Image (cartoon, rainbow, N blue to C red; front, side, top):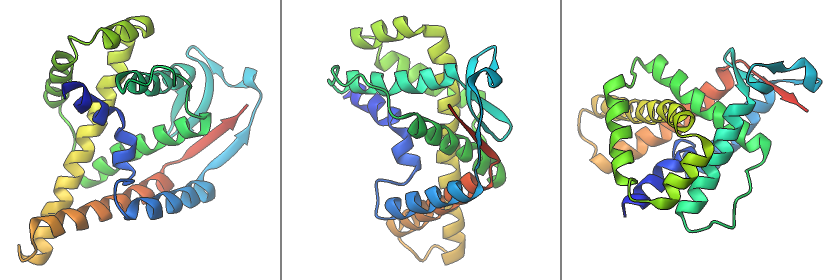
Length: 217
């Protein structure tokens, strides 16, 4: 059960994209349209997009998506499969899927900034500590992390948990706004549903507002 909890966190993209409810498919379609309309797509030669981190795949809000970050996203998907007892499914998601995933995650942080909320260092460290304790007995987890590079993995995970907590805080603020709007006359389930739908819509808008350039190779 502890490993299952971690798997749920590993598929955070599905959570933030709103795919677990009826508004998810609509949000995804709108997001693809928004990205298509507002994303600047540049074709460039590989040797024109090199830096210390290797090949550059995209620039999102002025921050580059380099090879190492793509490797991490690929590894995270493989780790998820391994913890789900699907070790044979060790292929990486398509390049465009990984890039879209990273854009969505950065859009969550952008949205959190707009809403005036932010995860704290203490909150992130506490979340990471709990996960490490829960998976300390998993040989598969420890072996895979060692092969990828433990320090590198947890450095990226720290940012991931920062984003996860940001999403939780944005959703909570939206719930509070719903309570004020309806003067506490709506039940909690309705308030949470309305807040979740608004979160999906705001995330689509945030993706469209971020200056994104994708380099196809």
